[in-house]
Amino acid sequence: MDYKKELSAYFKENCLLDEPMGRHTTYRTGGPAEVYVYPKTTEDWSFVLKLAQTENIPLRIIGFGSNILVGSRGIGGITCSTKRMNQTAVKDSRITAEAGAALDKVCESAVLAGLAGMEKLSGIPGSIGGAVYMNAGAFGQETFDCLEYVEAIDFDGRPAMLLKKDLPHSYRHVEGIEDYIVLSAGFSLEKKDFAPLMEARNSVLHKRIEKQPLEFPSAGSVFKRPAGDYASRLIDEAGLRGLSIGGAKVSEKHAGFIVNFNHATPEDIKNLMDEVKRQVHQKSGIELELEQILWGEFNA
Ligand SMILES: Cc1cc2nc3c(=O)[nH]c(=O)nc-3n(C[C@H](O)[C@H](O)[C@H](O)COP(=O)(O)OP(=O)(O)OC[C@H]3O[C@@H](n4cnc5c(N)ncnc54)[C@H](O)[C@@H]3O)c2cc1C
Image (cartoon, rainbow, N blue to C red; front, side, top):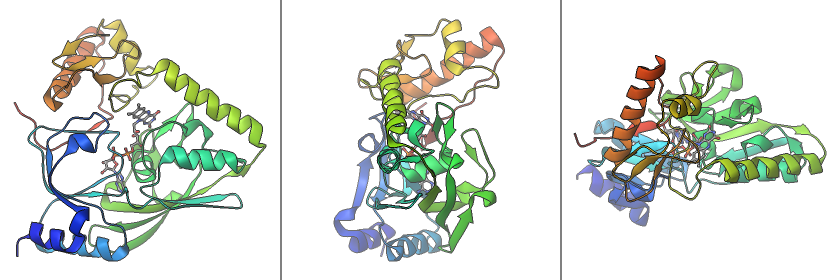
């Protein structure tokens, strides 16, 4: 039996074939995933990992697709979504959350329980798994600040309990995390008064609305912050605010974002990324590094 049929038979309605990735990424554009599945239980993961390994099929994990751009020609193999794994629990000053729980919901739960340490991550539109993978952060706070442990499995299906000290991390980078699938994460927070925490959350959410082009599809900041500077400042200084290719544009509101303002193709976005990088380098000598992740094949 071919592997797509095996996955369809096992996952039934939780298995989609040739699934357009514009439906699963915040850029709202992207070619098809050959097979798109929603594993939920350890049995589901064992099944899909074993099949991928024995048949030698590439396998990827997606959370909320808020940091990924998929090329028009799509992605081969199996794409596993964590969206159906979204349980969370608050106990004393600890929170546990499954990989597909929304980071913002977890931040809200922490604040409502009077727990400090995640309030400034409010409004980041990713999942817990994606936040751990990227060490997502904002306003001086990072996911790893209050992370205690990660429950994971490797691509051979072996379970692993990773403590924070097992995962060396820095700005938007976690060493070795690509060898694992994050199933859940535990956070240890600090008991504080509820009111200032809620105020901090609201202030951050307000700043996002004020400063970010949330009215258009995007995947947040395109480039990492270069040491001692801001990518948006360099892009602005190079005169690139508003620069567009096809339906993609450097946001006029926040030059660090590329927005899909008019049915952009993935190639419009990718070509604009390359053009911004080229012109910033030409004007400032600084080589911007992509924060966003490119998947699959792009048209030339
Ligand atoms: C409007 C907007 C604002 C944003 N603001 C911020 C911000 O302030 N700070 C910030 O850091 N980011 C920001 N982002 C980017 C993005 O939300 C974060 O990078 C987020 O952590 C990505 O989570 P995700 O679930 O969407 O991951 P995805 O985009 O789905 O995946 C990203 C990477 O994580 C991997 N991954 C996802 N889940 C798992 C898992 N369970 N196990 C193993 N690997 C996994 C994927 O394979 C991929 O390599 C913003 C994005 C948008 C659209």
